[in-house]
Amino acid sequence: MKRIVKDPKTRRQEILTVAGELFRHHGYASTTVEAIIQKVGVAKGTFYYYFKSKEQILDALVHELVDQLCEAYQQIADNPAMGVMDKLRQMLRGQHQLAVNESELMEGLHRPENRELHERVNIEIIVKVSPVLAQVIEQGKQEALFDVEHPLETVQFLLAGSQFLLESGLFHWNQAEQTRRLKSMQAMIERSLGAKRGSFSFI
Image (cartoon, helix red, strand yellow):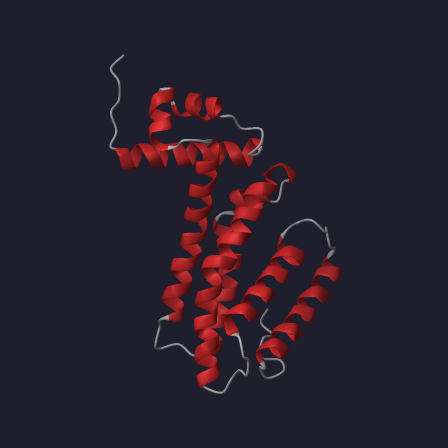
């Protein structure tokens, strides 16, 4: 059989796509490099040309996922036609939209065997997305909508808390418990940012 030759970018993305599917369905820890190689249908040497380890694939997948979210956030943050609260409303809903668009992936992230992948995603979100959110908070300060001394650090604490309590899947809150925590999160955001009471009621 004639060997199929693909350009490096296409081949690398093919390996990432297959690895992502295997991670979601079988868990990161249970997926071997050999399983990825067999599924893609490449030689072992070809795989190691693109990725030195399964860890590198994990990092690449996390960056790819979070970069999509970060790019969308930055476009919103830089839009001069939008007000501060409209920007925040779209950005905070954007995380939920990502979950809808990547529902299979997000469901896989919440599985116990994918804890490492989920934690990597959460860390990358805090590192990459927080500065974009802080940019909008700074705009809000200039427009006297917010009164907060350290926008970036405040956003990071709020984002980390909401991800761990509400998005991690560790606590298994029922609907009433989840609703109470969302209301508490709304109040904490408003107080932390010095925002008008009820301004984050869209959460």
